[in-house]
Length: 149
Image (cartoon, rainbow, N blue to C red; front, side):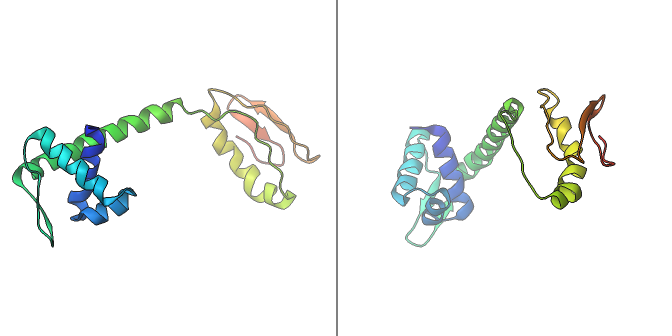
């Protein structure tokens, strides 16, 4: 049994109050939700949910487990996000073609705000518009036409 996945499924059942809604939210079959919750209960040797034909009620043990499980799941999600975002750096070639008016009014004024995020791996620039000159300065890129970093 994948205990982490079972914890996520159990938490979703508690949040939705319904196995069917949890299955729909997780995009998995209802039988999978049922089996995962039953497997988690067997692993813990306790009943987490009381089920009737009309409703699902959380037991005392289930409420305690839900509270701690949601904390753990939130910490895991935060950890995953911090590691994956720290290692993601844009790379590769980006070629952008656009109308001159759009470049002048939207892109060029905002480009300098974007470039500091790339300071670890500074990009190379080339502008094919005769009226647009790009050159580096201490703080980043300066775009001729009155826009500076």
